[in-house]
Image 1: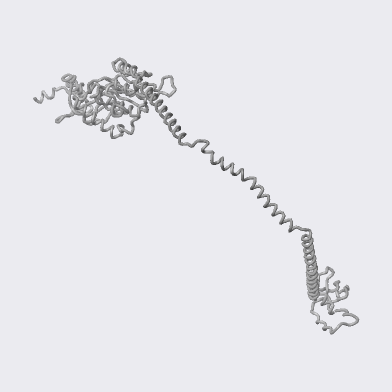
Image 2 (image 1 turned 135 degrees about the vertical axis):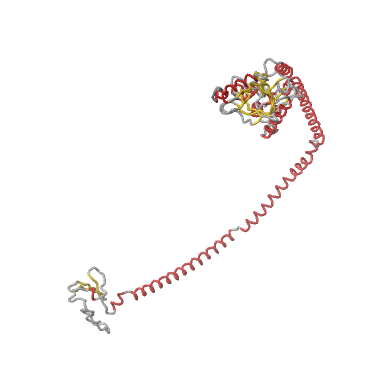
Length: 474
C-alpha cells in the first residue's frame, strides 16, 4: 500500500474495532455445538454467573454460563468432566479474547456420566454417608407410609396395589417430578418436608418413606445421583427405602438409604408384612401355645399322680406317732405320782431341818453374834474418838506455839495504828500520832511524842517478868 493510500485509511477507535470484530465473529459462527473438557471450574461467582474454560489436547476457549441459564441446567459443571455444550461464540472486548456463552450442557456420553458418578460416590463415601452404622431398622408394621414419586406414573399404582394386597395401610403421597430440571430439588424437599411433620399434626407423620421411580437410562435416573438428594436421604430420621429403577439400575440414593428395593413393588413388600400370613402365623402360634399349655398341664398331673403314689398311706404315716402318744399317756400318771413322791420326800427333809428347837438355837447364835458385833463397834468408836481428840489437842498446841500472843506473854508488845494495822518500823510513826499498844494482858492507847527519824536503840532484853508489867516503851 502506498503512502497516500495509508493516509486515506479511515481512522477507527479501539471500541469500534472491537465491536467490528464482535460482529464478524458472531455473524460467522452463531450457535455452535462443542465438545471438550471443563477446566478451571470454581463454582458460581458471587454474582451467580459461572466462568471456566473448555479445552482439548491442543486448544482452549473461555466459557461463561449466565445465572439464569445455570439454575436451569440439568447437569452442573464438574472440574475435569468431558461435556458437550451449545452456545454462541462471542468476544469480550475488555480483554480482547473470544468466548462461548453456554446455553445447554450435558456429559459427553455414558462414560463421562459414569466417571462423574464414581467420583461423587467416592466423595460421599469418604464423608461416611454410606456407613452401615447410620442405617435404621424398618418398623415391622408401620401405621403411615409416605411415597415420594410421580403421581401420574405406574409406580404409585403398583405400590398402592401391592400394599392393598399384603396389608392395607394409610399412604401419604408427596408428588414430585422424577426427572428433568428441578426434579432433584423436589425430591430432596419432599424427604425433608416429611421429616419436618409434627408427631400430632393434622397430617400424620409417616413411619417409613419410599422414594420410588420406574426404570430408565442413566440420564433419566440422574436426579437420584445428585448430592442434594443423597444428603437429604442421609439426614432423614424416618427410615427410608429407595426403589429407583429396576434391579440392575444403581443410583447413589441406594447407598445412603436404610434399605434398597430392586423395584417399587418390592419396596411395598419390604414396608409391610402379608396380613394373611401374619394372621395365619398368629393362629399357628396360638394353637402351639395352647397345645404347649395343655402338655404342661398333663405333665404336671402325671407328676402329681406319681408323687401321690410315692407318698405312704395316712394311717401308716400316723401309726407310730399314735403308738408313741398312747405309751406316753400310759406312763404319764405313774410319772406324776413318782414326781410328787420325790418332791414330798424333799419337803419332809427340809421340814425336819426347820424344827422349833433348831430355829431357837439359830436365833440365839445370831443374838450372840449381834451382841459381839455391838461391843466391838463401841470399842472401835471410843478408840477412834480418843485418836481424834488427841489430834485436836496437838493441833491447838501447835497453833498456840505459832501465835503472836505467846510472844506477847513473854513480855513483848505489839504497836498498831488506830486503823488496826501493825506499825513495823519507827519511821512509820509521826509526832502526835495516836497509837494502840497491845500487851499480853490487854491494850492501851498512847500518843507519840517524837518522830521516827532516827532508829531508836533496842530496849534491853528483859530477864523475867516484874510485878509492875513492862511499862512504857518510849
